[in-house]
Amino acid sequence: MRRLPPLTAVEAFVQVAQLGSVKAAAEELALSSPALSRRVQAMERFIGQPLFDRRHQAMVLNGTGEQLLARLAPPLDALSVAIDATMGDADLLRLRLSTPPLFAAQRMLPLLPELRARHPRLHIDMDTQPHPLTRLGEGIDAAIILAREIEPSFYSRRIARSRIAAIGARSVDEGPDRLRAPGDIARATILIHRDMAELFANWREAIGQPDLEPMAIDHFDSGQLMLEAAAQGLGIAFMLEEHVQLAQDDRLTALFGDKVASGYSYWFASRRSALSKKAVRLFHDWLFEAVADPQLKPLRQSP
Image (cartoon, rainbow, N blue to C red; front, side, top):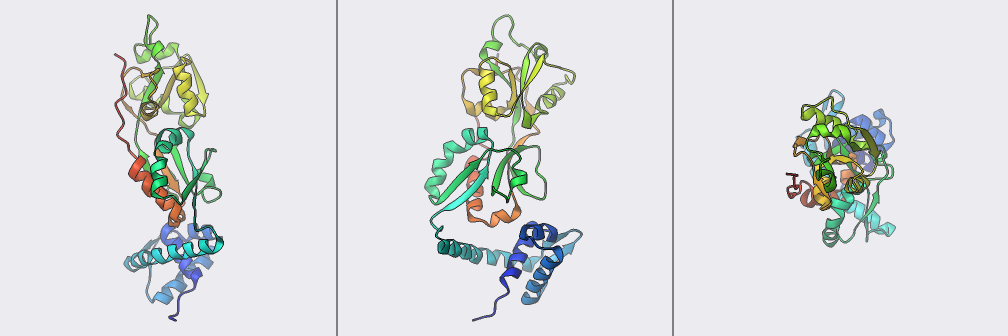
């Protein structure tokens, strides 16, 4: 049998290749940076040539390294399947996913039957607790996150862009006290999500009224509750336009007609090493094929 490199050297090579940093890979494998570097060097000695271009605080795969990583992926997947089979878990692929409840309810759950039909072995444990980035790799494999941007140390990909919508009940758009223009916000309560605290400030800056103040601000940590509160006439919800488009609630309407781009987007995020897991890859690929950037129907505007 042909001699093979130590599995620890292969593991070190793959981690550095995916993370681009000895320090990050060492943290992932619970090793010191010098120990990890020795394992990578052992892999390079076995191959007989360098696999990385060393740069300041980064290691980038060279051509040989890229070819090796591509060739190693299938047998590593097979090794993972073999180990799972031995442990009795080969019949299931388990993904631990953190997701905002509103995203899951509006955009994922209606399409999950198609994912289940395509990959019947893939099962998803959903987590809606806060601070998902800090828990990646420790309780969750991947996360859907509503944010302006994601720290570059993580793998991330934007799911969709959206615009800000001022959403109210149809009753606030009728009668002598209707809200006719943005300035009328001064006599209204607005509803703000704690994870998008700057959304109203962004909106008023964009429409040229940076000093506009509402009568009151009520804070929520649930988008679903915000939509229901707006539908009940409790305030004007500042949310993403897609939230209302997908809600398809005839009680709600978009006020004022202003089209303001939002700095907030939904992102997929994971540790770079997590992309080597089959469950993560299957979900990631399906997400960007079936869920990302849907063609939403135009939101009805008030006359």
